[in-house]
Image (cartoon, rainbow, N blue to C red):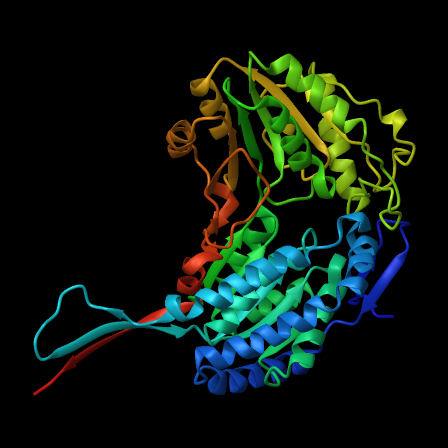
Length: 463
């Protein structure tokens, strides 16, 4: 076997699950050429024709759910009891298909001029490269794949090595739907090959979801090519429980928002600020719920908390927890109650930390695991200051009974999305975007179509 093979090591048992050879340079170049050719015809189809084909692809993908759910568990550890990702995939895909006609229609000039026809049309950028992550291998990829195709582009998908089978499922569904040959292609690439594609300007737009360091590598690779980029990078999403919050609702939803998928969610809750009125009851309720999780094999229906996707991810969280405790934090969960956590595998017991502060990495640096720090605050001003004290800004959640207060606080938060009384959810009607080190660009909503097209102005004079 070649050293350049793509290998997925299952976090379930530490064994090799999948091995695939990377593509040859000749195969990459031939595939890009065929994608360009397919896109020339695709861009001239009607939006209705595109919708028919993309809907057929979606139906073919959804039909695979029974096979996909255990595959996800084996590849990255999410328990099968949660049923996979396809409910969200369908919601996002059908919404983006449904708004395509309106989002892509010509924009007339704001004022009329007799004797002139003036408008702005949206044209496809051409060839879109999607670099998808392992934590939600279908949801994250669908955000760009569907609107890119609906806008008249060709798409290349490079999936994370941890979830290589997801990329192959996308290709299988595309082929079964009768999508034009070459229009969508799943690539098995090394990092160097990805950099070559970007550095040589072989694609017109790249959407990357991953780490901050990965995003910087993408920017460096594409530098000077004028390739447009959409980057969703790290996060340290905060929540604030106000004095007027429905406490039981906040506890239940925030525990789920922090620990679902073993905390491996782009917009998962990683730090919680609770008004002093509710603090003790909130901590007590959260600890009680977390102690009820069942850590184990994700293929077991009884498991509610699976392993992290890789041992090195679990080790990072272990280090953060240990550093926090060494600096004075209190760990409320006894890891010994979670027998699957033996200390040196991807299986990691959940943790709730109090007596934390922002000198601790667990409150400022991305954890992406089953741990959360909880701090007491006196009110809105202190909560806003602490929520903004982060290099990241993807989403922030506010628990309150006052909509106006949530909006007012939200205006002061450095984040891409503001939630009220919910968290860890993407509404396809709204732009999914981030600020600071979380990245740039937007997916979903009508703004996704602006990212995946270019404006073309028409100034037509009649004589």
